Length: 447
Image (tube, one colour):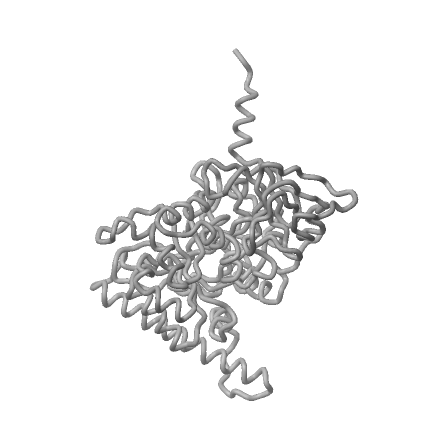
């Protein structure tokens, strides 16, 4: 596969492009917001059942949106002068949903021209920044958001260290406009001697004995962390005016790991098995890492341990087929078992074309023990808390970013439809490739 970042540079600068992009994001060049993205109006959504997620439902409630944020929520809210009124009588108002693991924007469906930027060459690429490869005009983005998913984590995966994931809203002309947190977490896969897959799938290409291959990769990962810790120590010493005679030159890979080594940035570990989970916990203890487990099929077996350590788990996709030796309901019942043990969970779809099905992944788990309210939290406030943006996202509360959906019913019900959609306070049209093709062929000339 070609280099995803270099392909977006002038040929003469391709060699240096990843470094420049990482440096630009690190200095905040990519974190600025283009305030003129679109005019955000003033709206009042009234008459519907408001579901704040963090509190009780409000029958016949109202939500006021102005300046891109939620201004007020309640049963007796007055409409601001000049506000556009959205009549939600008989409808339901929810916060936009968040998918905690996707490749959205990094790949396209086969029938649409586009690049595939889901994997970089090599196993150690912590300096790669997924946001720089996101196609803001992907056909899959509007298909996703019209089903109520307004925010996603998107990242490359599959390498030992795949670089940083981005937390983005699904609205904007450029990735800069979409970005909430351009580098929200490092993404890594813990080696496995078993079968392949997104969760540490290195058993698919073993060199010699699979177990020895995995052990060698674990040692390599530990050595990389040790080097990064030494690099961070020297960097800290120099920052306080100390001297380091043999100080290394700037190393972008090590620079990218410094926030994770300091515990300032979480690391998403794609894992499957108990052995992988235990390996991640040992790494976390050795290097004082803040970890998030993503996709573990066997997390339920260690639920009490994960709850005691406060380690969140991103579950799913629940639409997978259970493993050969697993109980038939292991995948579907795991979210409920984790929540009952006290583990904070969120959901992922892991791909790109299926992100619109996020609510149905959660719905499947509700049939196997997950409480419906907890399922909704796992799609909204929980991921916001896990990724450090709960002060701005994840619920319908005054002061938060106005990512709001108005639906005909519970979003987890496949029969529900989104009637109105707001992202950052802007009413987003409910059009996508599907609706455009429908209108195009409905208007075809009659015989």
